[in-house]
Length: 133
Image 1 (spheres, rainbow, N blue to C red):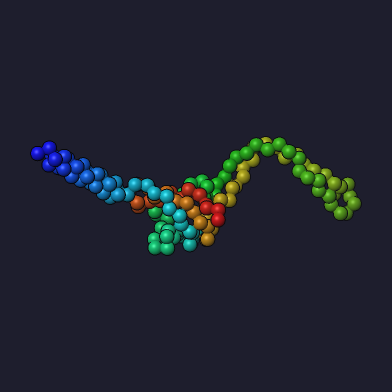
Image 2: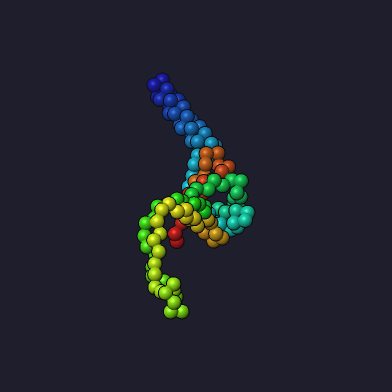
């Protein structure tokens, strides 16, 4: 009788394991995937040559978008000279100081290979960064 009980217990344990794995797979947990930008307007990314993601499915990070950053600068420009010989065109430089706004051009371009994280449920993807190949 003890052998049958042990057998039944092992069957129950295996069933619980199988159901647990199936539940996790059905919920589509996050996954890391690679894609390639095939269009930028509108944004489209091809994943594994069988799935094309559109902007409605994509969440972009700062790593893959143009953005502005405010920086404090304090330096002098390089010497510049004119050619007419007049004093106002003599070799000179300028102070460049203060808080300045700069644009960082990180936007995606066609052909970029990107790293994506598939969000839980599998319907949306976070575009994390470019992949250097």
